[in-house]
Structures are given as structure tokens and as C-alpha cells.
Image 1 (cartoon, one colour):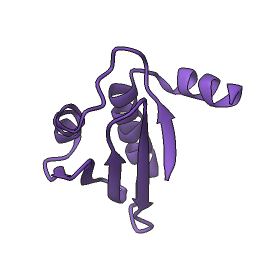
Image 2 (cartoon, rainbow, N blue to C red):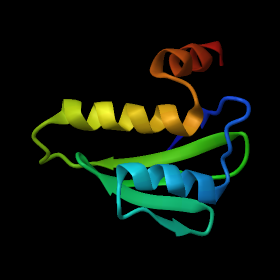
Image 3 (cartoon, rainbow, N blue to C red):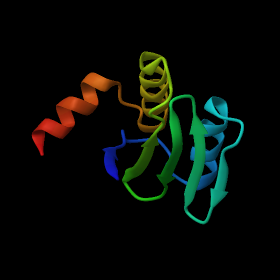
Length: 96
């Protein structure tokens, strides 16, 4: 499980996270405070909502043939969920 910081003003309530995840996967479902779904190259993704940060757990699909597609899609998802692009996330993680 990995913790991602969220930009101020970005909502992390389960309904908002669910609506964003549904843009990337039609099978996103809300289970308590978690949103569970799959994406190409990732067997399962679980996003724990609420609070200042998002906790995200992923399980990769070793049989998927095009890993760059799944990496790009996952980065777009993280950018929309956190409000931070990959460079900003790296910068914030290196400060810790």
C-alpha cells in the first residue's frame, strides 16, 4: 500500500473518488471507505478515501503485454485523484 499526498482543495470523499475512478474503469465499486476496480495491466486497485492523503494498493498483471499503457493510464488517474502531476508527487515524497 502506498500513500499519496493530495493538493489542497481536492476532495477525497468516497463519492468523488468513485466518480473519478469510473472515468478510467467501468467496474469501479464503493466498499465502505474504499473504491475497488481494475485497469489494463493492473488486476486490482484499491483506493482508501478520506483524510488528507490517499492510500492506494495495486496488484499488477504479469501477463499484460504493454506496460507503458498501464503506467500512463495509472499516472493520469493519480494526477486527477491527487491534483499533483508525477514531478510534484516526486518532489513532495523526497521532502519526507
